Length: 45
Image 1 (cartoon, rainbow, N blue to C red):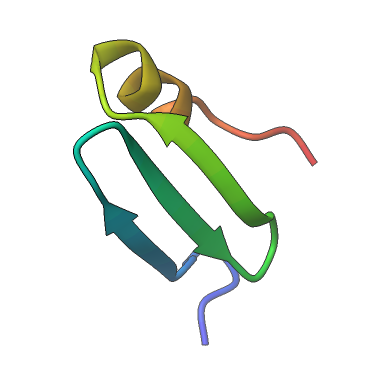
Image 2: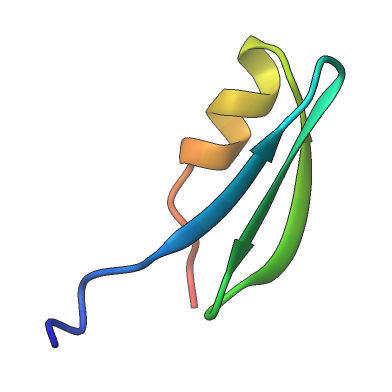
């Protein structure tokens, strides 16, 4: 498996969306433009 790939589980509701990944665990973001920008921001490990 390529070490640069990540698999996400995403649950989207009206107010927030929850994201789970093996490397980051559970995160929750607002379901708006700001929340999506935070989700797409690269994570420094």
